Length: 335
Ligand SMILES: Cc1cc2nc3c(=O)[nH]c(=O)nc-3n(C[C@H](O)[C@H](O)[C@H](O)COP(=O)(O)O)c2cc1C
Image (tube, rainbow, N blue to C red; front, side, top):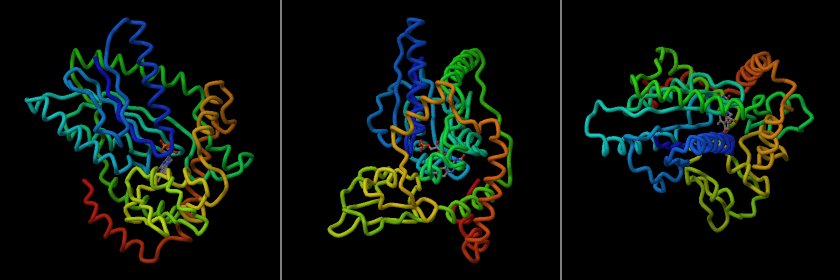
């Protein structure tokens, strides 16, 4: 069986977990002396993917939770997979097993279920899914590491390496079950999902408004290279944001800017950046079992965060937000 793991990672957490999952699969394959093709593909480089035979492939999807769901650039992957599947499998009944995981900071919400639904629509059978708690790539990465806010969220869950090994073990069991009798994860229907996502979008936008580039910018172009959506262009006197509304808010440009000229509103102004070195250190801490002392209080931290977030939103939300929310819901046409 081949594996193709497609992922998107704004700032590095999902890339790291994807790489570790693939490493575990590779080691197992070697131990079992099985030959298979393992591909790890960023959805930003789909054209480089060489998976040729979907019939003998398990497809994996890894994503960071964005605003309670998967980032909207996954639409590109859905179109790609649908085309690939239709070009290879003549029978429309033939389905392909898929596994899903997300990385999140405080609240994965229904993101895994939402991804399941989308994959089912394009002819895949989600057979296994899991969420991995990771550090925040947002506000907390700007905070002083000795502060409560930093320490209470900036950690990978305890012994994440073991969780990844168990994930692969369980996945392989599901694949065996699937071979004997195909199945897919059942989703419960949630009619208020569309409303919830739209409200969350408004809350997130209040907290993290459109990206801003201040006067300290030296036009080095690091943000232009980093943007996964090609939404920034370098011009003679400025970095132009092609479409501020359409920004993915993944925060990659902000963390790549050497001048720290980029922010997403007042909650992200600070001197710390979420770099690969920080990520590796936090991952190592988790593997070595010296993760956060706050892990046991996680639920109460999330509760407090919800309260604080709602209070911030009430104070700062846009006027007429309900009217605008209805407009946004209509335009997004949630199903
Ligand atoms: C725009 C945006 C929205 C986010 N929304 C959520 C959320 O709803 N729930 C959550 O637990 N984490 C949320 N996060 C945190 C990320 O999911 C988390 O840090 C993730 O591991 C980042 O992965 P990456 O480094 O691969 O981009 C959000 C981050 C961003 C940038």
